[in-house]
Structure formats: structure tokens, C-alpha cells
Image (cartoon, rainbow, N blue to C red; front, side, top):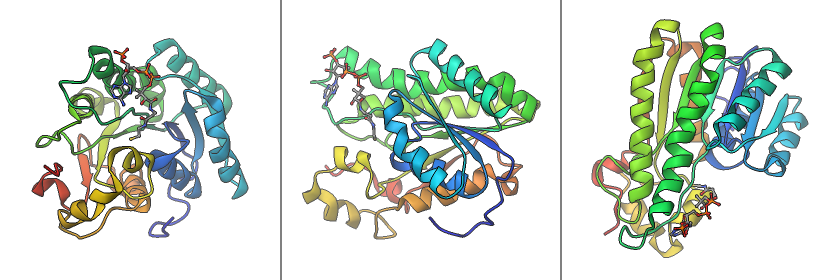
Length: 260
Ligand code: COA
């Protein structure tokens, strides 16, 4: 973690984080707890959340875990209700649950395409929709974890590109519709971030050097880079930022995410 921000900037806030057990969103969840937020994290399998709960409680934070598949609206409603029962409110929602794999469009089944859209796009909508009444009460905010794959075109990623384009549309639409309730809705689009499941799944090790050469800042991102951006967007310092998806990629997408 970095210490760019005062440790108490999220003191008194309750953050509900999907996909908050591991990876980039796990880092964001832990950083929020390190900066004073009470955490609720959710994943399809509750056992995937145990390590994060232990880590957060290890430094004196609070971490409530609840199993839910973001594709299942009733399960999402239940997770939100249980979190409110536990903490009394929700101030921040982070949509980080995502699915990904590499597959050429002419090999991808309709169900494979739909599965990723269901997790990323419909899952994001489900969580936003189910938390609306709570966020209205708290004048809270939503942070959607997106990607840059769809800004140009990324081969083998048609499903995720379509899904994340939908997530960005949700960010913009809700920022307009829900801004009047005092709810801010923003996103973060990470570039290639090292030491994540995503990079292990999506980048063959022999291509790492080739990709690094296409990143203007000349390095992969670190989970801490995303944590710092999320802390800023979640803080009062960003209180007039609404409807933005902040790209945190070292300038990579401007040269294209494709290695072809
Ligand atoms: N290539 C092509 N198609 C694939 C695939 C792959 N690597 N992995 C899954 N699919 C297809 C399946 O074949 C299936 O389609 P079909 O019924 O036409 O055969 C469809 O996707 C659903 O697969 P299933 O395994 O039943 O879905 P699931 O809900 O259990 O899993 C995934 C969701 C597919 C996203 C899975 O990769 C997953 O759970 N990943 C873990 C989380 C993750 O990806 N994190 C991303 C970090 S960046």
C-alpha cells in the first residue's frame, strides 16, 4: 500500500465491494479499510473471502463477508440487505466482480460471450440498482472497475470489450440520473497491472517485454496505482467528479492494447 493519503480519509464510511477478495479490487478493498472504511466484500464463494477478512482484521479493520453471484439479482439484494443489517448503511459501492478469458471471436460460444456480459455488465447494473435506496440515503457513490480494451479494439477480447463498454455506459448514465440524489458515479480503467490473476490469465509471459515497450511510461502498473486512484475518487477531494472513468494505464491505450 502507499501512504499518499491520510489514513482516516474514509473514516466512518461503509464500502460494499464485489470481487473484493482478490486482485485489483481486493487491493482497493484493503486500501479502503486501511484508510478507515468498514468493509463488506462479496464473491460467489464465501471461502474466497476468508483471506481478505483475516488480513483486514489483522490490522484492526472491520470486514463483513457475504456470498452472492452478481448475476443473481435476489442474491445481490440479500447481500446489500445483510450489509445494511450489519453496519446500518452503505456509503461506497465498488463493482469489481468480473470474468475474463482469452478467446477468438470465431471460437467463442454465445454462452461464453453472454456469461462475461452477465457478470461484468448486468452484474454492475444489479449491484447499482439494488444499492440505490441506501446510496440515496447516504448521498454515497459508486466506483465501477472497467478496462481500456474497447477504446480501440483488442483481439481475443470481444466479450470483455463489449462488457466493459456497457459498464462505462452504466457509469455515465447513472451519474446523470442519480447525480440529483447526491450520488456520484465514476469508474477506473486499469491498464496492465502486474501480479494479478488477470495478467496471469491474459498475457503469455513471453509477451511481457513486447507489451512493456508499448506502454509510454515503460512499466506495468501496480495494484497500488489503482488503490491510490480509487482512494482519491472515493474521497471528499473528488466531491465534484461525477461520470468519469479515470484511465490508469501509463498511457498504454493511446498506442493500442493489441500486440498484433
Ligand atoms: N474460452 C472460451 N470459452 C470459455 C472459456 C474459455 N477460456 N471459459 C469459459 N468459456 C465459456 C464456456 O465454454 C461456457 O460456454 P458454453 O456453455 O457455450 O460451453 C461459458 O463460457 C460459461 O462457462 P462456465 O464455466 O459455465 O461459466 P462460469 O460462470 O462458471 O465461469 C467465467 C465464468 C467463464 C468468466 C470463468 O472464467 C470464471 O469464473 N473466471 C473467474 C473470474 C475471472 O475470470 N476473473 C477475471 C480476472 S481478470
